[in-house]
Length: 233
Ligand SMILES: Cc1cc2nc3c(=O)[nH]c(=O)nc-3n(C[C@H](O)[C@H](O)[C@H](O)COP(=O)(O)OP(=O)(O)OC[C@H]3O[C@@H](n4cnc5c(N)ncnc54)[C@H](O)[C@@H]3O)c2cc1C
Ligand code: FES
Image 1 (cartoon, rainbow, N blue to C red):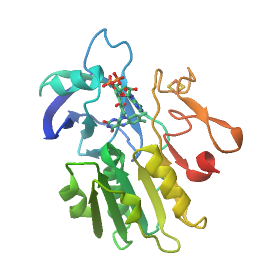
Image 2: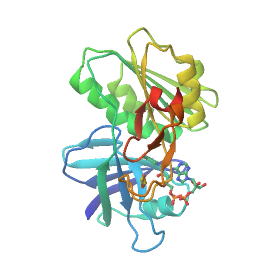
Image 3: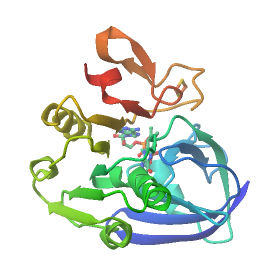
């Protein structure tokens, strides 16, 4: 059990939670979280938004019962965290382009921070797309070299990549699939996928889906971050 340090409203249905936690966490990994005892039965997967000095942060959208209970949790209350689970974003000495759609920006922030911490001279461009109210843009502006924001349109229309840029993306799958189609094959692209999860550790197959060449992948264990070639080709 961990203790919630804060749980604040950010924008309509979007909340930012800080939890006291110590451990090794990689950008793109997730935790199965719950603040409730019995119902809903399953814990809910949340990506790590940030991790720093024994504080882990989540950015989440209230969509159903689990996230409604999460948003009602108060500082000082307990939260169960199982994890960190899954494969995160590989971080190499490259220029990066990060493309996030809506709440899909959540795992990208920690990845962007880690990229600039490790390779401050490498260029980082961030594209953030929102259907209406933008959020957390200032946080990205503090760490990235360029931040482009779109509200109500298609963020993929703005995205430009150079040869050798590594692209990381998370958001609606329609956005990520479109992005993968428009980015040259030579660029490495990592997509972070979502699926309903039960165990979170690769045991129940509840999150498996067909990837490229008909090969099944488990989002929780083999992902949630995949090289696009595993999913889309
Ligand atoms: C690896 C991973 C990381 C995630 N990280 C974050 C994060 O950082 N922030 C965040 O806000 N959310 C994240 N999610 C999504 C989050 O887990 C779901 O929104 C949450 O489980 C919904 O629970 P609920 O009880 O509130 O809603 P439910 O009552 O379970 O569902 C409400 C509605 O949302 C849909 N839904 C639920 N889960 C998903 C899903 N995984 N994919 C698509 N639709 C879904 C349901 O079909 C239903 O229509 C992540 C999911 C995965 C798999
Ligand atoms: S959630 Fe059980 S295998 Fe992925």
